[in-house]
Each structure stands twice: as C-alpha cells, then as structure tokens.
Amino acid sequence: MQRPFTAAVSTIAAALLLGGCGGGADADEARDTERPSTPAGVTAQAGSATSVHVMWERSTDDKAVTGYEVLHEGRKVAAVPAGRTMVDVERLKPSTAYRFTVRARDAAGNLSAPSAAVPVTTPASAPDDTTPPTRPPGLRGTVEGSRAVTLTWRRATDAAGVTAYDVYQAGSRVHSVPGDATTARLANLRPGTVYTFTVRARDAADNSSPDSPPVDLTTTPAPGSGPSTAPTGLTATARKGAVALTWTPPATGAPVKEHQLFLNGAFATTIVWGAQPPPGEVTYTFTVTDAPGTRHTVKLRAKLPDGTWGDFSAQRTVVMP
Image (cartoon, rainbow, N blue to C red; front, side, top):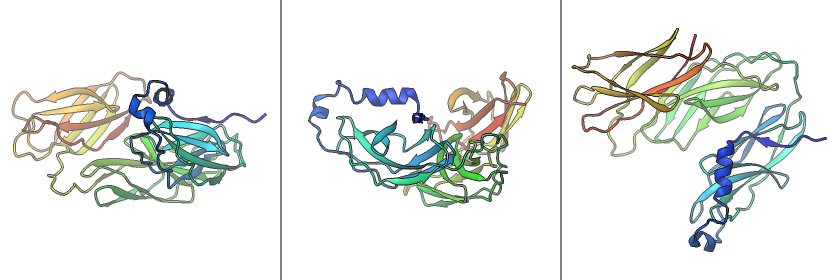
C-alpha cells in the first residue's frame, strides 16, 4: 500500500493557515474575488530517497497572500503560511518520479492558478547507510548589493554519494541544491544586515553532515542609511557548564555600556558594565546547565547613544561538551 505524503511543516502554522480561511473573514475579504499571482521559480530537489525539497518565489495579491499549497498531480500534499516559500515533502517512495506544482491562497480563500509542474525523481534507498557525509569544506561568500549573496564550497564525500546540500542561515535551513552543485544564490535579503551561513551535505539515507565552518556576510546598506551598528568579531567557546564570548562593540562615538544577549533566537539577558566599559575587545561568560551535545546559538546587539538597540552581530553556534 502506498504510504501517504507528509510535509515537515509546523502544525501551529498549518492551523493558522486554515484559521485564516474560515468563516471569520471580514466583509472586505468576503468581497475579494481577485486571485493571487501564480508562484514562479518553482524547483523540486530530492533530498533523500524518501523526501523532496520544494521551493518557489513569493506571489502577490491585491490584499495579501496568506499561504501556499504544494500539490502532486493535483492533490494537495503540503500547506505553509505566507512567510515561507519552501517545504519538505516526506515519506515518498525511492526511485520514483514525481511532479509538483505550487499555488497561492489569499485571506478570502482565492487560489492562484497552479505553477508549471516541476519533475523530480527520488534516488534509490540506502537503508543500511548510517554514516553521514563529510563536512563541506571551503565555504566562501560574495555579497551582491543590498539583497543577495552567492555562496560557494567544495564537495563533501559520502560512501553512497551526496544527494543534496542544505544552506542554513542562523541555524535555519533557507535553501537546498542538488548534490552535484557547489554554489547557491540567496536573494530577498535585508540591506545592511549581517548574515551567518553554513552548509550541510545530505545523502540518500537522509544522513546530514556536520555544519561547514560559518561564513559571515554583510549586505550593502540601503542608500542614505548609516554604517552598521553590529558588534563584530564575535566568538563563542563552549566549556563545561558555561559559554565564553568575546567581541568588539560597534564604534558609536561614545562608550557602549549595554549589550543584549540572545540565546537560540530569544532574548536571554542584558550585559551591563557598571563602570566605564573596557576599550576594544570585551568578554562575557554565562552559565549553561544543559546536557553534553546540546546545541545553542548566540548573538548580540548594542545599546546606542540615542537609547535604541543597534544591529545584530553575526550568530555563533556552540555544542556543549
């Protein structure tokens, strides 16, 4: 019996999407009969013998796009909210050809025309393969103006062959390319922002390599904006029961007396120097009680002389010993 499709998407996000299409629409939404534009740039990449990664470009609508649906031969197999333009379709059959389309939905329930179908074939299974590929070496990046970057790396190795490379930004996967590719272009970024990218290799058994060494890239500021106010040179070292940080505060024309520390994307604490802060590089150590092998991400931002918070630093990942 053929196994059902499932998609690696948040059940909360799916509930929000379905809630946006219910009977609670206001009068304006009820009168909205214009369909969103058809999603363009749809790609489908087999990530393993049983999963395919589908990506597309954002649609537009006279009101607002509220979500996207991914279909296989006309049957919906995944739904994601408007903020996402990718999804993994899982529990597929090895060595099987599939064709996926994507359509957009608005708050009134109008559906766009489906995109052009994109074909993809899953590779043969490797059920006894438990060895992940090697870490992709040599990650480099080039900034292309204020909203795009291009990453390049060298090939990883695997006993059964690499089927895909996954690009992560600050710990979240943002792009995937086939296993024979060693470059990826990322667009729709924010001007004047620090991004931290890593790459992982994946094989047909869905084993993922360790992260590549990170690369930090800062997009070009928008015209008329000032220089970056992000702390620079952030390093994070995990020790037993603690994480030690070093960084250089931004040049603001006045001493920077406060920083906010974000742990795993959430605010954790404010670091305050009671007296005059030290010049140049500074250090801070905080306690961590999690078990060995636990991963944490850290980033910082400084309080500027005008009382506002500056740009975020690059993000660092540590694994507790």
